[in-house]
Image (cartoon, rainbow, N blue to C red; front, side, top):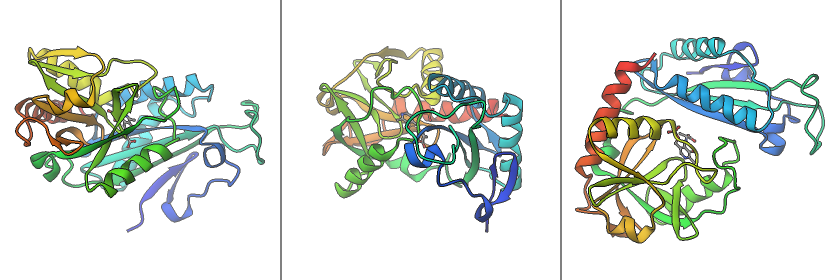
Length: 287
Ligand code: PDD
């Protein structure tokens, strides 16, 4: 069945939502996005996603396309119209279309941003079979640009990384720069070693995950020790546990890195517990 999507002020059947061939998102990957997960038909961590969207837009000098309240209303309307119980809402803002191709940004007084939202229904998001077995990853070079803290739609290399993982018969790839893991193709990466949860510290090198912030907060509240620092693939292979976080996977155990089992080769207790806490708390606070 056709979804209802949102484009620049209108709710439309997906077949009727059309964007110009001159849109800078299409020509230049000049746009940013957010993915907000939906549990029980409600939005998880909406304020966090909106705050990061505002930051991404301001770092790129793209005008905010709508007020916070309007964006919340659009998210809720799409979830309701498409009967999404578990899944996500994808939001994208591009710098818009100047009606031609030019490297120079168009005048923001004249060219307005393009705003697109659509839902993705994913039953089984919380009770995920993958979370019971854990996932396997390979490592690949991180050759992305230097502002990974901005959530841009330049996702070609992460897509290539997923294809490299697929070709290697595993689920995902961890990106490595200067000998250290930055993050996963579309998630933040963690290990559990020496009784501590270790994950890369925040900088321009990684996306500041909204799930990461929540999970670290819950971990600290549960008296787990957290260390924000870089780690190597060898350290991950020798760790007790590994896992990833994102809006689309929540907390997902990682059981193999470059063909080497992590810990027992099964999801570890810290990852399993954090997943439970994250889902439980998210259900409570979703709006
Ligand atoms: N990806 N790092 C990268 C490179 C990401 O693309 C993502 C999210 C994350 C986790 O961020 P958050 O916890 O805010 O989802 C980390 C989304 C889910 C995507 O591209 O579909």
